[in-house]
Image (cartoon, rainbow, N blue to C red; front, side, top):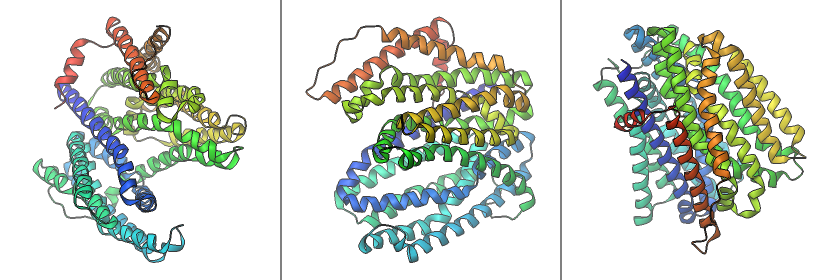
Length: 509
C-alpha cells in the first residue's frame, strides 16, 4: 500500500510538472509567432475569445475539487454504486453548464458587437470564435467529469500525459499554420479541437479500467447534492483567492499616482511568482485523493507522518523554485525587461519569500479539504482578502508596487497563522509543532545557502555582446551555486537521502 502510494505521488508529480512546463513553454514561444502571423488586432481577437472562455469556466462552481474529494473517499469506503450514480449525475450537471455556456456564447455572437472595442470586421472573426466555442462546449465540459474520476482513482498521471499530447498536437498545428497557412477561425477551430479530443482517451481509460459501468447521464440529484454543497464552499474559497489576486492591478490602476506605470511594473514582477504558483498548483490534485483515502483507512499517526514528510518535500520543492529569484532578482529582472526595472528586485524577493510560506502547506491543506470542513477557512480567507485590499489601497500612492506585494504578504501570513493556530488542529488533529518543524528546517537551510552564496565572490559574465544574455547566464550561475549549497546541506543533515532521490527518479514512468 505504501509502495503504491509513493509510486502514485512521484509519477503524478513528474507528469503534472512536465505538462505545465510544456504548456508554459508553448505559450511563451507561440505568442510572438501568432502575433507576427495574424497581426496585433487579430491576435487580440484570439485573446478576447480565450479570455471569455476562461470566464465561463467559473461556472464549474468548485465541483472539480468536490467530486475528486468524494470519489476518493467513497472509493476507499468501497461505495462503488454511489460513485457510479454521482459520476453519471456529474455528467448531467456539466451538460447543463455546457448548455448555459452555449447560450452565453450565442448571445455574445449575436449581440456582443457593442460590448467589445473592436471594428466590425474584427467582430466578424470574434463571432466565429464564439460559434466555435459554443460548438465544442458540451465536449470540453463533460470531459471534466471523466478527468475528476480518473484523478480520484489516482490516475492523474494519465490525464497529464493526455495534456502533454495536446501540447504536441498544438505544436503540429503551429507548424501547419506556418507551412500551408490558415485563417484565424480555421486556426482557432483546430486549436479548440485539440482540447476537446482529450475526452476520447479519458472515456477509453475509464471504461478500460472499469471505473464506469455506463456513460449514460443520470439524475441522482439527492446523492449529487452532497458533492455540490461542499463544492459551493470551495467555490466561495477560490472566489476570495481570485479576488485577492485580481484586485491588486485594479487597485493600482485606480489609486496609484500613475496607474498605468504601476500596473505595468506589477505585471512585470508577477510573471515569475505566477509561474511558480502554476507549478505548485499541481500538488493539490495529487494529494487530495491520497488524503481522502487516508482519512478513511489510516491511523492518525500515519496521517501525521505523511503530512510531515510531504511538507518537508513540498518545502524543498518550493525553495528550489523561489530562492533563485531571491538571490539573483537583479539579474533576472535586468535580463527580462532591462536594467531600468532592477529597482523592483526587492519586491520580487519579498513575494518569492512569502510564496514559500504560502505553498509549503499543500499536503496539510489537502487533508483539510478532504475532511470537508471549510467554513472557518472561507471566513479566514475573506477577512485576509479584505485586509490585503485595504493595505494595497492605503500604501499604493507611496509605494505602488510594494503596496500590492505587502498586501499579499499580509494575506499569506494571516492565513498561515489561522492554519497553524486553529484549522490544522481542529479539523485534522495534526501536531502543529511537528508540522511547523517539517517546514521550518528545510526553509532555514535554504536561507543559509542563500546567505552563504551571497558572500561568495563571482566573476562578472561578459561572454556576449548582449547584456541581457550575460545577465541570464549570471542568474543561472547564482541559482546553480545556491542549489549546490542547498543540496549539500540537505544531504549532510539527512533532510533528504540519496536513496530517496534514486527512488524518485526510478518512479517517474
